[in-house]
Amino acid sequence: MPSESDFVRSLTGFALGDAFGAPFEGFTSRDVERRLKHYSKRKIVSDVTDDTIQMLILAESLASTIYFSPADFAERLRMYYEAGRIRRMGPTSSQALERLRMGYSWKDSGIDSDTCGSAMRVPPVGLLYSFNLNLVEEYSVLQSVVTHRGKEAIAGCVAVALAYALALEDVEVEEMHQELVERLKAFDAYTTILVDRAFLGEFEYKGTALASDVVPAAIQCFVHSESFEDCLIKAVSLGGDTDSIAAIAGGLKALKSEPVLSFKLEVDEEELKRAEELSKRLWKVYEFIS
Image 1 (cartoon, rainbow, N blue to C red):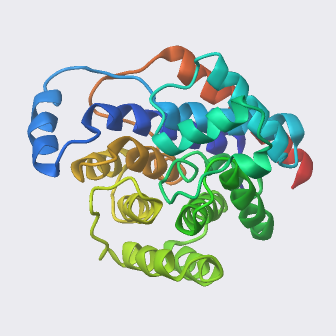
Image 2 (tube, helix red, strand yellow; image 1 turned 180 degrees about the horizontal axis):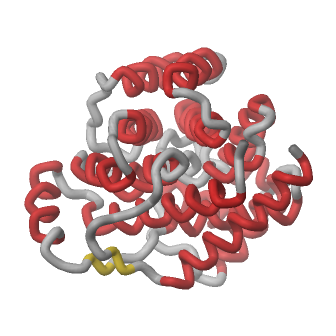
Image 3 (cartoon, rainbow, N blue to C red; image 1 turned 135 degrees about the horizontal axis):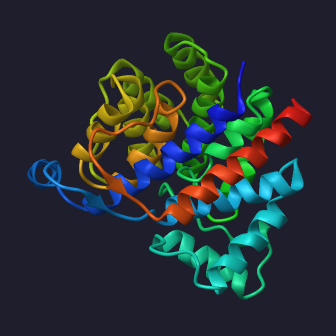
């Protein structure tokens, strides 16, 4: 049975993965390999990116509304954006949030883009509604269209949220594989094929920020790693969008393995504390509605 500690481990693991991946973002796998050797000899000082910040905004909205309100989520995104509290955003999210700032409704603010900006923030949906996979799908789509309306972006959101839901419910990897592939068929055939390859360990990351590239890469790192640390190292070793891959994979792996690292990763304690507090608030809602 799920527990409060599962929620805390997952969102904390997500934040740690994001922070660990941030210094390697945009580098090639070869450059990352060289940097990893350098970093392994000393403390890594990093910070979370907009991946964690947007994920926590979604968690905050869910904890406040119980059943997902895209209007509430969009308003929180707008307020954080106007206050300058969301940093290092991708171009799609920036355009969408500018539209919200200008008065667009959440129904019209989203951009026809297939990048991973909405897939990386969706884990709280999977955790909170894990008892009802149809709700997981429905709310994954709704939270995506606030910023990302692309077919592959939406399918990536559904894949990530379902993976978190099934991992929380302690579903075995083989069953998770079958469930994800079967449900993704209704959203996008291309993403379905790539996620299937990821479970088999046959996916090749192309180094982009597309949801159809980042999401299968993260799932493959989660499935084919031995520990939380191994998962994060595999994620950043791919190069490219390392913060998003490591964040998604890290939050998933933390549901199956303690988020422990052998090296010192120094992250803003306030962000980690906020992740823990919101995890506990989400857990209370989960207990109430499940």
